[in-house]
Amino acid sequence: MKSQLTIESQNSPELLERLLRVVRHRGFNVQTLQAETTDNEQNLHLSLTVYSEREISLLTKQLEKIFGVTKVSLLAQQAEIKASA
Image 1: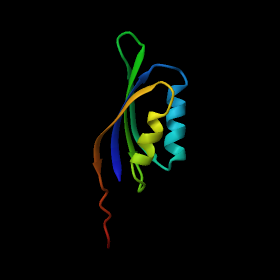
Image 2: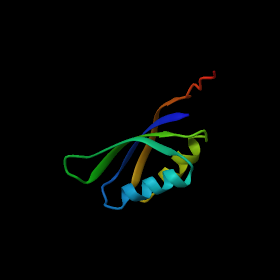
Image 3: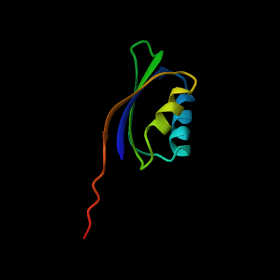
């Protein structure tokens, strides 16, 4: 299942590394990642698209626990359709 998340956090050098480590350890694959800082460069806004057959709540609950993360939102979720021959 493909899921699109937005993550709001404090801007710190190690945050992206921690976030990607949690994604990998929970069994999700990153398909897209977009990050941008706010005008004052204190906060970071991330858009993340991940893929896995696992339940997305397994990932979002862990992302919320990362130090500096203030909000995790699930924007969209879609099942991949497998073609059979």
